[in-house]
Image 1: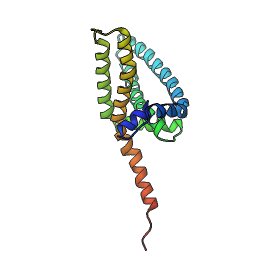
Image 2: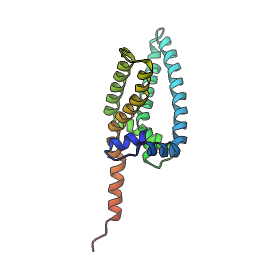
Image 3: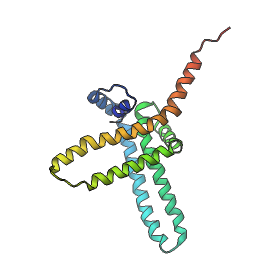
Image 4: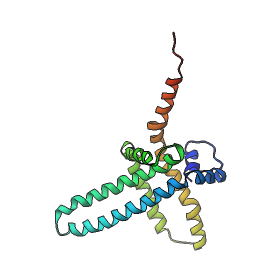
Length: 184
């Protein structure tokens, strides 16, 4: 889904079905490993947050690790915006993709924060939409086919300019300088 919505965000053509399956075949290992890491990190952070929140009620000093958990959670969430596009766009090692994604959490902090607020608002709206005259099946199909692709497009549309500015454009400038013919 990332490669298709990335191409849409770059205003490039994408063969939706074939590009999707080609990208799944090419990147499934990185996405699976990243998913396992996400579950592990967010589970540890959730338990840590609850633990320190309960301890902070008794001792103010526990607010420090509580806020550290919140900051680490936000940084890791922001990195998740960049990792899929790094996996499908560049030929990077897994650790290098994570390093770049963590750097981009700082470089694109304003965009990341805005994107998180928009996604949180979207989640609140979707969770609170009454099922007026549509059946549960139609509601589920709309969520599966529209919501996930819209979120992927929104993420790629928002963060691709940061990746382009800090990785793609410098690479192209370096290639142009390397290919220049020295004048004599």
